[in-house]
Image 1 (cartoon, rainbow, N blue to C red):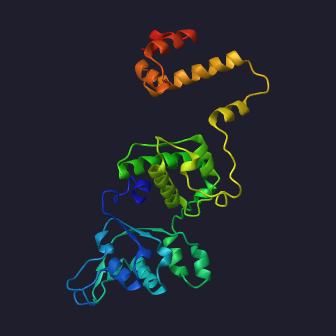
Image 2 (spheres, helix red, strand yellow):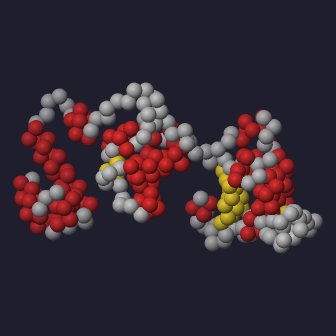
Image 3 (cartoon, rainbow, N blue to C red):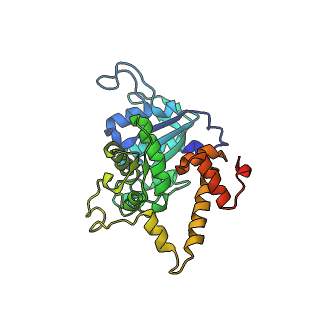
Length: 288
C-alpha cells in the first residue's frame, strides 16, 4: 500500500516490512519490533535485529496497531520522535530511518477517551489519515472484489475459475459482511468448493435468512430484470433485434474481432454468426 501511494518516493525500492501487532503478546512484540541482545531473556541465544532495523530506509507497516499496550506505545513514540531504538537487553541506541504506515480497525479517538491509546502517539502517526468504509457501506465494489477473489481462490485451490450468477450476486448484496473482505473471501472460497459447476448460484452461498435480514426472497433472474426495465409498450421485433446486435457486438469486442471466437462465445457456428451479421445489416467482412 505504501509503495502504491508513493511511486516516486526514494523508499519505493527499499524494504517493505509488515507485522500484525495483534498476533504477539507485548513482550514478544517488543522484541519483534526493536530486536534483542543475546541473553536478554530465556531462549535468546543470539542477538537479533528487529523489524525496525530490517525496514531501515524503507517502510514498516504496523497492522492492528490499536492493540498495542500503552508501554509499547511509549517506546514506539520515542522511535518516531528521535529515530532511535534500543534493543531489548541493551543500553545502546541505534539509529533507524523508517517510514511508518499504520492500520487498525479500532476507533483510535475512542480508545484515547478510554485511556487505551496515547493521544501524543495518535497525533504523531495521524499525518495522512485514510478511512476505508466497511464493505457493507460500499456494496458497489462487490462485483470487482468478487471477480478478484474468484481468481485468487482458483489459483490457491488449483481449480477451474468460477463465475457468480446475477442471482448469487444479488444475494451477496443483501448481506451486511460483519467480517468485511476476509469474510467475503471465505464465502467465495466455500462456494467454489461446494459448487458443482462453473457458475456459483445463490444456493452455493450458505447464508441464512436471518443473516440476510429476513425471509429469503427469490431473486429475479437477468431476463426478468431486463424485461421489468422495459416500458409497458415496446416493439418486440425491434427490441429483439437490438438485443441480438448488442450481444454480437459485445462478443466481437471481447474476442478482438475474431469471428470464430465471437461465435464460440455466443454458442453459434461461424457461418451462423455470418448470417446474423448480414441479417442485422452488418458487413461480415468488416469484422474479419
